[in-house]
Image (cartoon, rainbow, N blue to C red; front, side):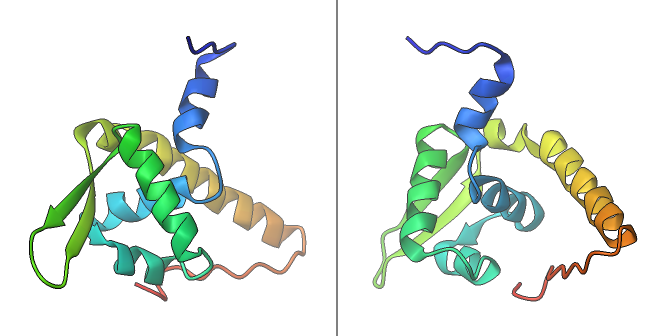
Length: 119
């Protein structure tokens, strides 16, 4: 039996960690992607970590793994309808992140945002 003190714990169990939200945002913004495309968009993630995070998201019913029966093998990932239901929350997180970056810059801190460069 799973036990949560507050509902956000259940959400964080699915999307918690450094990379899952980033993966989900890329899938929301770009639709279906191959593992290699995700890896290019996330140059600081290891292949092992990317595979692990995708498997966990798949196990939680948030992403679909599509395997094409061809040589060489082709695998793509897409959001399930359940995963797509996270889009509004993730878009709010992105907006908050933009505000945080602006606040950080206004306080005199150097910030570099590299978005779209690897897409």
